[in-house]
Every structure is written in C-alpha cells, then in structure tokens.
Image 1: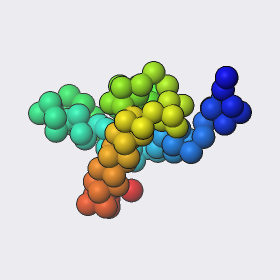
Image 2: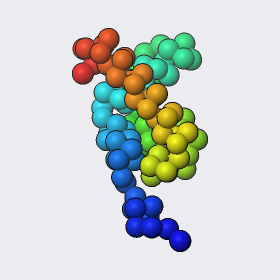
Image 3: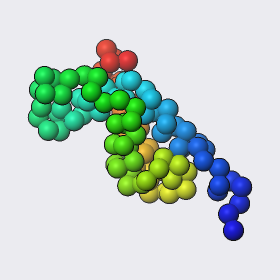
Length: 99
C-alpha cells in the first residue's frame, strides 16, 4: 500500500528537473554539449536547437528513467540528475555570456 507521499507527483527533485528543462540556458548547454561530443559545427547544430521537450527526453534517457517523477523515488536516478545539474552549473559559471 502506497502512502500519500509516494503517490504525489512532482515533488522536490522532479520539480527541479522540470524547471531545469524549461531553462533556455540549459537547452543551450545541451546544444553546445552535443556539438562538442559529436564534433559538429554550429551550422550543423545551431544554438536554439534543443527545446523543453528535447531537454526532458535527454534528461530521462540520461537518468535511465521513464518520467521525471521517478527522481523523487529512485536514488540512482537522483544521483545522476545531481551530477548533470552540477556539470551544467559549472558550465554556466564558465560561460557567463550564455546566462
């Protein structure tokens, strides 16, 4: 039997993940990350390519989950999300012009 806390969607980490996916700077980070990873030019993958849905899809795949709501109950996924968020924050601090 699930208690009320377990049935509520969108608690702390899930909410943080949703806000991150809506952040245009995070979407830009994903553009630049993919360009770097796959050695693409800006013409091949311009800034502004990733949108909120792309960010969500990438995040759930990276965390190996089906829904961001799982971040509130899956410790491994939560840890992966924290690493992603920390890497993004370090990138953002180094790339002030992106903010």
